[in-house]
Length: 114
Image (cartoon, rainbow, N blue to C red):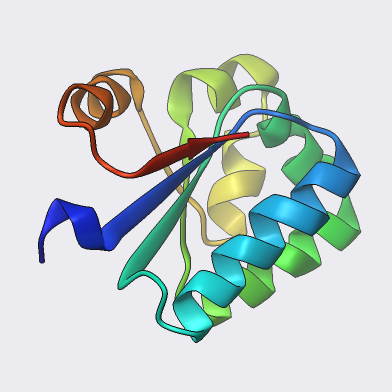
């Protein structure tokens, strides 16, 4: 797979409307309709806390995972916010993202930051 066929959405904005009307909607439809071969949503910062605490958001996360959208979270953020176990329990990959994000940016890979 070419890197250009894989979209990453860096989700840092914990606003619920932004999550529902951009991150979740676009991420889900991009895979469903084949706009991108792969989509990964990166949960970073305040969004880790939102995912861990909001049942509606967790429902969206389950739907995204069932729709073949990959979801990964920043381990440093999750650990600092005390939500690592909740995120992994939802099926979210939790890993250190600093180096990976830097690589995506340097390679000019498709990346949306919200």
